[in-house]
Image 1 (cartoon, rainbow, N blue to C red):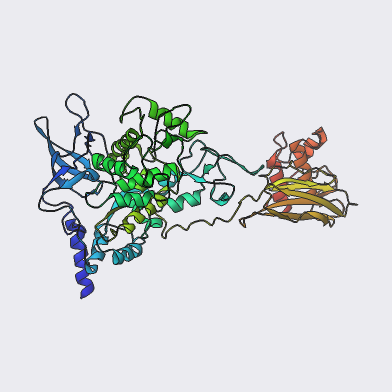
Image 2: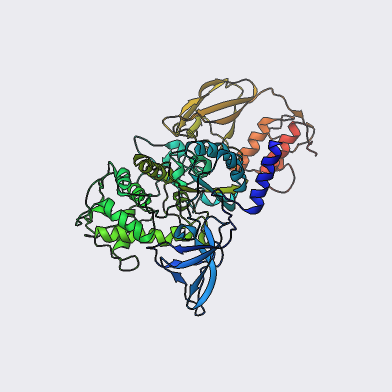
Length: 603
């Protein structure tokens, strides 16, 4: 009976649109306003769609304090609203991060009992694979609110648009001499296996990321733990929830801790609190972002001491695109007069202007979490592009920093909203993090047989070779060298031969345990097995005229194809098995099929 009641409750919640807080997502009209301090907020025609314009084609902007009527909150990122503009009442969509409810509903989602939590998860359409993580988080922090963001994006489409490939490197991983992370780097772009060389795409230590590591950090389930879920925290300013002590907690151990910027009389944390209030952005997010961009030590973008752009600051590295010297590009952007109060010729202007940029270019565009600023799956105008950072691990690092700020200030039991993406056709279980197990290169740098030439000539990507030796040769000496100094090679050295066909395998084992095998087919002339040919006539495919068609003949045809042996008229006549006037790989296949009895070669 209890199961039936629970099922009916879930159906009711889903059909009615009831959400976690106990109010309907398609509730009766609710009074609200644009958060104070917000400026030039754009309104959309559809959720994340085209911006609304007036009758003259000018973009419609609204500022903080503008009253709105909230009509629909079904889409947790974009609320449907009506508002007054130019004497008319307009209807459109605004980013929920910049709205607050002023009516009877306080806008604060209330803690929900465990009995109702299962129904809530179902009403939010969270996949079953998310629920064990969310149940555990709910048990620890009942006031936390988990909202699903149904992206409608297929997991395969997401991977294809984010993975590293020629002409597309959006995600990178740090690799240094003491922590190279070879197994996390891509081997499909920016890598030469023959020389075991990776080429950086940003500075000298940022490399294209592997598909496996990318999938791990794109999977939302990776972050459904207490300290990492903050990469899904809504990044809007919340009065009373964020304080200067929390900002200092994030800045601890960096050049910004309890310090004033060059030329300023107020501390970094004080200015960041002002910037957050002014532009409606979480100051914890601002602190974590600068920490991620600048690191622990003051560089030229925070010191104002660039020789090329003296007195210019860019704490958020805006415009510092991937290049050999991204910091210089960022300073060039900061030095150019234009939007966001540029030039940023003081630390204060850099901190305030950078915050305005984040607010208007990302948060108000629906990219209002650390995750969606790294992986743009919510801003429909530029899906998979317009991504703030290239560091694939940034959401985890910055999310953990924000968690520490809340923890250090005793705020973890507050009501905090997390907006968690959901994709179509996701892997059934959370993606495992690939082992940081060393160099994956299992290719050869060279392969040779003393006194003989291989067919075809050696190439590290070619795995099959052949050669013919005289009957009197009972052994050969194989030399093989791995491309990576950390790989090992087995199967080389002196190898004994029997008369006929011999298969020799040379195996390379990479540092990470992966293997590649190179196969040599060595034919020792003499008595050997094969399909008899008619000795009375010259038989196509019987290259040595011994009355048999066997592996020796395959090797001889291959040598003709690659130009090792001369293509005489007689050789061409014998090697042109299919009679098309040329000797090609098709003739090799026909001989192979003849040997194994699939298709007999006719006269």
